[in-house]
Structure formats: structure tokens, C-alpha cells
Length: 93
Image 1 (cartoon, rainbow, N blue to C red):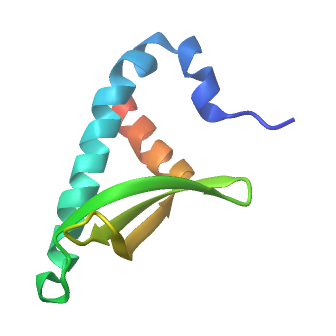
Image 2 (cartoon, one colour; image 1 turned 120 degrees about the vertical axis):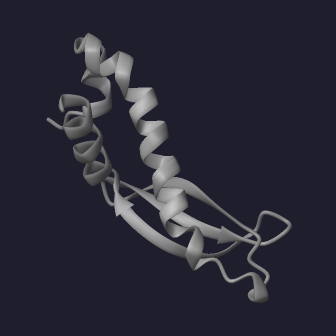
């Protein structure tokens, strides 16, 4: 039986309370760290993140988009489980 780690957050009060703030900070830092990879000369105007499933795993991708918010290319992709590990270690510290 597979367990979704997000479904058990309600059992951990402190983690549940801190998780949105830490997740937001993690994603903001991820965006800022990758902003330098934008290629404005190639029509890339902004970056944002998307989350998607792929073969029973979820991933977070930082993508570059043009003026029409169309994704032009992926800058970086990380497994959600790696992001959660980082977030949980930050909450624990």
C-alpha cells in the first residue's frame, strides 16, 4: 500500500502549521536561484514553477515562459520527494 506523505501532514501539528511558510520560501528561493537562466533575447520574460506526475512520482519544474505565459523551456526539474526532504529538514532545524 502506497502512502501519500502529504496526507499524513494533518497528524503533525507543528509541521502542518509551518509547512506552507517553508514551502513558499523553498519555492521562492528555487525561482530566484534559477532566474539568472532566463534568456530575454530569446523571448523568455518570466519563470514559474509547475508540479506534475510522472510514473507514480511528482516533480517540480522551474520553467521559462514568454509574454503570453506559454512555457518555452524547462530550466530545472526536481522530484517532489527531494523538495519535501529539504522542507522537513528546515522545519526540524
